[in-house]
Length: 347
Ligand code: GCU
Image (cartoon, rainbow, N blue to C red; front, side, top):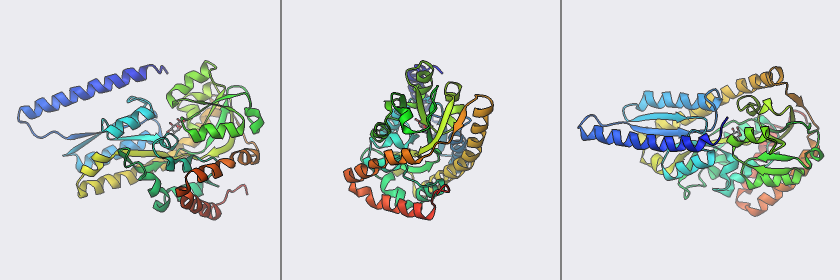
């Protein structure tokens, strides 16, 4: 991967957009049929990833049902820049949608902090049921109205775990002195401080090079990062401490969404549901395949440390986040009810 290319891609995209605008203008100038409104969606995963597969299903669905008026285009692999760049493009309406990790959205509304808390969900079932409950997600998803965007659905990004180039992580003490890449989120930086490692925040697209050039000693992510992003070519130890289940979020530009007619909005909303459904089905298959590839082709060793010391180190973060934002307390309590209903299977 050659990351300086990202900026070039962005420049190419902007030139491409200008060219599109010009050609649309010249077409209408010639008195030809009204052109379709291009709907641009950016994300940072490869074309093999469940996220891209789901967005392609959305693209086909919208093009099939509203193709006379809209043409959806999906831009993968950070073609439009990093997630932070893409959120800004969505805010201004330069693009219409993008997928951002919940982690980076907390800098736009601190309500998002809740889903970044380590050990928030007791199990994957609890996580899925809570994220499917509008009483849990609505107060978060609508919290960025003033920032110009709204969240329209969530995508599964599995469980985040530590992986390192050369030192197996069996307990938090093993993180001491290690530089670990985290997402650009104050909650994640604080989590690493509590666990005793040295947090190195950076964008996803820069992680592979940073690992390869020993700028960092490890990172934390789901299994897909090992295979689809090649991190398992460099990192040989992956420890299931299961510290976070951080969803990815599809956000849309407010003005674009508001300008849709009621009928169009209903079709787009059905499309959002399709994204969630397809992505979650694909996710299960993709993680199984990634685990298999990581072991057989990359020689990654999976470790299963006792989670208790990790949990104990991280729990103070729950109280500090709730104290700083009491408004999210009811959501936190609702999630605890899901945790009671769907406890960890290891309990
Ligand atoms: C996962 C997640 C991405 C995120 C990435 C990261 O891959 O799905 O949305 O950007 O982690 O660690 O930055």
